[in-house]
Length: 111
Ligand SMILES: [Zn+2]
Image 1 (cartoon, rainbow, N blue to C red):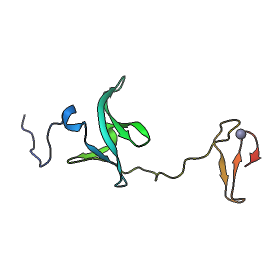
Image 2 (spheres, helix red, strand yellow):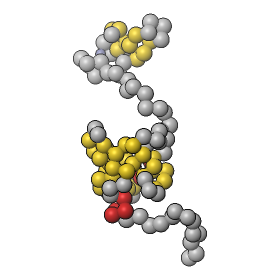
Image 3 (cartoon, rainbow, N blue to C red):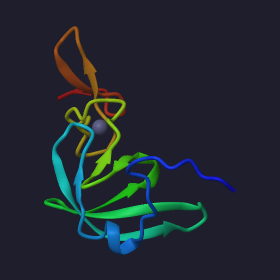
Image 4 (cartoon, protein in one colour):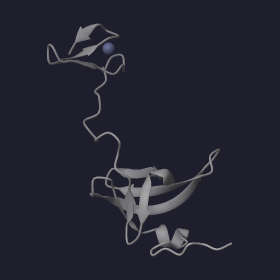
């Protein structure tokens, strides 16, 4: 079976990947590959990435390219501030543009 030889295409082993720097889709250094794991139930590789905030799992599907660095695909949505949740009930707040305030639909209260 003839394989198309392309520059930069090579088999990657766990040893190749572990220790590689991971660059996120915004071009920032996310961390370093700590380990490679399989997701049980899905034939999918997961990179365990050591970041400042602790270990994160990055599905192989999120990887755009592997060269000197592991480069992740840009996120579909920009990593905006996460929606705050209501402390008593845990429901996500809804932002009400009209009043420029967060509203909890569960408690029916503005924050
Ligand atoms: Zn609430």
